[in-house]
Amino acid sequence: MKRAVWFFVVVCLFMVWVALGHAEKAEDIEKHPVCKFCNMDRQQYAHSRILIDYEDGTSFGACSIHCAAIDFALNIDKTPKLFQVGDYNTKKLINAETATWVIGGKKPGVMTMRAKWAFESKESADQFIKENGGSIGSFDEAMKASFEDMYADTKMINERRKAKRA
Image (cartoon, rainbow, N blue to C red):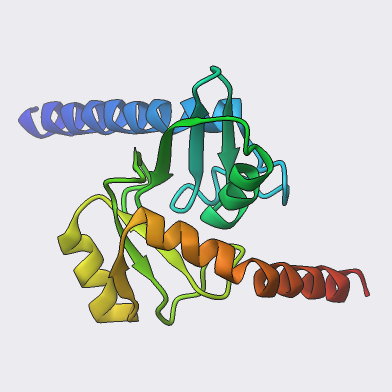
């Protein structure tokens, strides 16, 4: 009998945990389910997604820092209030400006040849670097790298899409 009660308690706790995790992810993804620049599913790329909240009350959801950089450049007259990014490990949104970023490494990035990953803790970033390479950077450095990489990344994306159509 005790075993059945414990099993029931564990199942209930698991269901609450799943429900809370899903509710947290769903808010920004429900509002912006796909990236408007590349049409990628933001739920699938929750570990690299970005949410920009602008001072005028609008927001933009991107699949990656690459697409966020495009929106940032196109909306030069809008002032960002908050940049949030998915933590690489937990996929929860964190402040992009206070996150620890890993730039580069052997793991391919999303929409980019030079990866840019965000971590809530420096320890997580250091562990990632041990396994995959790359270097620690700031949000400004990751965004600058996104602009530096824009031509090569856009060319790569166009070539991949052309090959898919062929």
